[in-house]
Length: 176
Image (cartoon, rainbow, N blue to C red):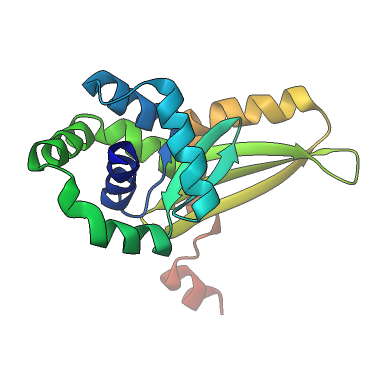
């Protein structure tokens, strides 16, 4: 039960972001709270019970607390010691950049009905989606390459699009 509460607490405190399987297991295993089998069993049970949701992005599972999970945490949060809560918060401070980047900037691809690959590149800031770019490409290699490069080049692409699409109001008035 304690690992389930730890996971719910982690997902609740990360707010609008998601946590990956490796981030959750890394924290719990590093602190020695339980073993890998128990973590995966707890995650699976909480998904089945509706306490957390999972989405898969490029073979990486991302977990998010549901309303039911938040409600359960309200009832049982007092069973998590203050020291464990502090360890979780310290972990988030220590890993903030990694947690934020994995949740905010991601890309994935899938084979579509036109026998091409659709690549979806996303940048999120808090709960807002800044960009959700979908591209159709002809090969899996190209789709993979775009996904692999998205994290490093996403800011430049976003800035380029803003610069190219922004119409200066002064320029607009003089051309009318």
